[in-house]
Image (cartoon, rainbow, N blue to C red; front, top):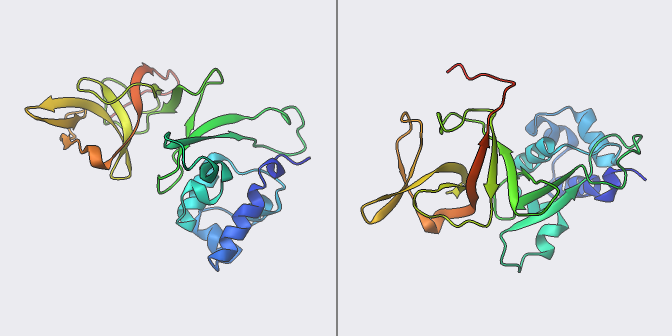
Length: 217
């Protein structure tokens, strides 16, 4: 059994591409990948990584629900996230055939895939990596962040979520009667916290320093 066929993901990618009247070459160019690699994905010879899935959905202009039935199957659930057990790699490698290589939580309303790797113990914690300098000196690019999804946004907490569709991680601070999102890096001005346009992910409870890279900014 081929790993990619466990999801039928290649067929879904092809069906979605054809429904939008896009050629394989057009989609590959828009997704910044070789056409030969896209062809392998659609034939389900290999499984795409989550980075490649994100690029494909961005190029197609679709949400995660377009490719994953888990999303629509849980559309009536209160939780805005759905979980996917993901199998990736070469089908000739049978070592992990029965074990998902990652369990992921994806927000069904996000314009593109927003991927968070989960520890195998439960669905409470999200592990992700910082990619910007907005919270220096609390953490630096490349550091590992642990997000607790059970905590609600309250003043004083470092919240993680989507503001107007953009991923945002800042400290929530009370300013008079209003709440604002404040970056630790003072080069970034505070922004108003608008609950109506906020999709909450959780609260950052730990930051683990990466010893593989040093920030030189």
